[in-house]
Length: 305
Image 1 (cartoon, rainbow, N blue to C red):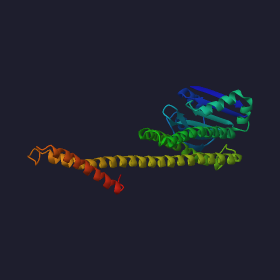
Image 2: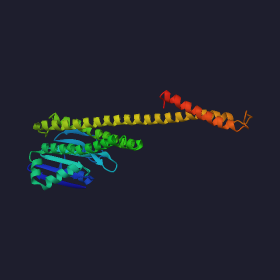
Image 3: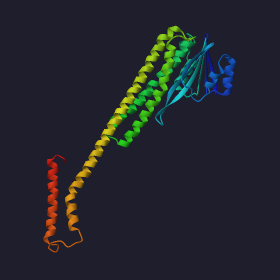
Image 4: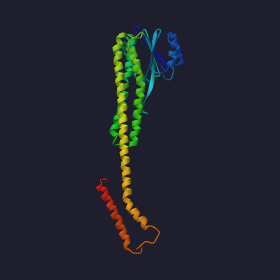
């Protein structure tokens, strides 16, 4: 859809947003050593993160979690990167906000352009990857806020609402973890320092990014454990509520047994003694109340009430 190119010193940064067939054809003509399979990957729906080194360049596929505020879930956004001597090409769908801001900053701010592109293509690659990873911090903060809200609402809100919130939070955590885990493998490959066009002095910086991703994944694993713990708590509370309802219904049934027996006996369509006398009715009522009171006393004595 659009192709923009920045030049600084001996470094050229080409940023392609929503690539069309014409864009990819122009790219292949400009850099004929770019392999057709790599160019095809740039137009595929979603490629698994990877790092390939071929004759004359490095091809990297990365993914970034993109937060959808309406559905409260993260979707993967892909960015494809070619790195050669003095050349970097970034290709993406245009919805990666941190990369858009980084490129715009290099366009408009001479100091940022010098900082990003003044030392070569591999430091520029590091800045891009670092920007993408740093963008994950506020996303994890949003997910942790969801989990914190669930913890605070656990004993206040309806169970059904809490279960829905937990399902949303768990879905978000698993989605982010699924996106970030392969990125760690890519960064660790860069950390080895065995790649052409990647300056060896960047190894410590790659190690720092690897530690950052490791911490993020550890936080996500902790979030999964917290959600599982909350789920167990909700199951316990629900079981306790059910036990209370069953206990109440059982007590009501027991309390009504004496009256039920008496009403069944004296409700039979047969001739009963003293049925024409006015006093037996009051005696039966008193007997029913007495039996019920005795049942209540017995249950209370056994501490069942």
